[in-house]
Length: 211
Ligand SMILES: [Zn+2]
Image: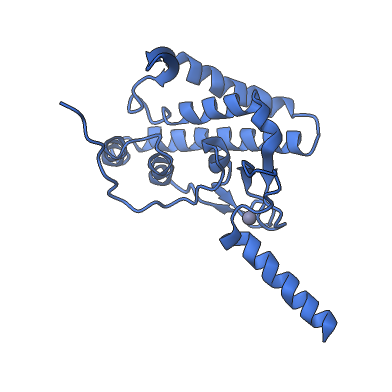
């Protein structure tokens, strides 16, 4: 019997424009450059929703966690803290590389600890003539959904794609994304969010100087 992929039960919550799950994860702190960054991961439910939106967790795995968060609140809160710790370490590493600065040692050590944890919980398995990484059961702990995120960061950081990681040109946004456009000239996280706003601003600025 073939397994049918279960349909989504919830509308997506996160704007996934990063082109890589680790960049989308970094973008869960919104308005990062402002004095009031907006935390999108305010509780474990939000973190698990991010997991489902990005395909890390199946809807069934999300249900599993939703049913357990209130039974194990300390574990869930700890996992959320660890998630944010990983996210900020990843951001520090990517930001340093993009700005051609020295990568902070503490952030690198933190990220490496998560990558090592992910490695402990994954193995190579044959799949259709090649090999793929497979993780242990992602419902085995509240932290488990961080494994694929840490692995994605490791793969991206050690790949030639790293040169295509950009920050959105809007100074108030600076979401990170992987520029896979043909000429590598993508400037905005998304045209709807930032590109159009900048275009509108330029239009009005021109009219002002013209008038
Ligand atoms: Zn943007």
